[in-house]
Image (cartoon, rainbow, N blue to C red):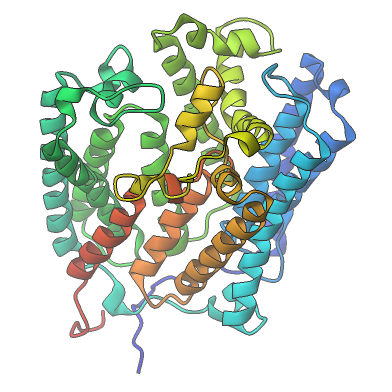
Length: 481
């Protein structure tokens, strides 16, 4: 017999009528100020039918409830982000955005449709043509899958100690902490290099590469503490306090690397874990997180640009933006630039790559030390100027396989994400729920870059967290609560 923990949370429930009204009201509260701002800026009169259609499609994914509502359904999240960014790009508020032809619009729409088709394909195969969520919405995690609070705190503390020691070693070698450096990007690039910024030869050692793997343990300690807090078990006040301290310390060390992704990554994973372990997120909470993310993208992006040694790059937002001048508008322009330029890079590569396609290929550049691979970001930097280096998730697929890659690549990704979602919604494994949180965070980068291929650090997250969760659980011989 399957015993379940008392009070353990089942999957997210279908949306109620009152929740549906709240969702629509939240959308209006977001849209009305945006439309008002657009009118003030003279943007709305410039909107074309295409812009309205793309914005309506993004809004449709926000309002989509379906038979069984999950506000963090992967197709919903990607559809909303994808078409929102495209709607912004269609406004051409950045003079760096070209006039895209029919082929480009076909590519970006086909890529998303292929992802959705792959997700639907595996859903139908695994769930018998029934909603994945509908089949498993009443399941709860078995008590053997829940973390033991005391054991988890000990393991999380050990993880933070390992990660903090690794970070300390790196910072000593650098002679500074990147987030406090005059140019955080340049400081961080000295260790591993960033497209356009060369690594320091004196720091290009095997020891530093091995040590850097262990810096991720700060993040793992943070995740374990989050899971312990979010799962529905009885924790003492002392345990709650210790977990909160561990989360804060882990977050500080992770963010110390300097960069927007180091703020967003742990916050996004924690948010998804809360959704599936504690209670479903409300629309206003997700909207607040979206606003927080946009602020981080805009403000930190602007600060990074201003810290750049290249004066032309530091004034990029002011030079390219059609928005009014001034620091506030430059911050907004930086956010707009970040959310739209990757599509422009992809468009330009579709024009230039047929004559430049390298024989080694781009996919899985993270394995370039073992297989001949070329970084598509470095190629884009050589071809174009400024920060135009990330060609969305479609860039590497197109670079290696042309139009066929735009269809097959996202289709495979859709199948993979559908399988991960199916496994998570079975609610029979905490590790699978964590994988859902991790891969959903990676999915939000699809309008920006293909993290699954270009970097391989997510494989360490999957493996190490699977081991740490297994150790932190009580095992099959535990007595039910």
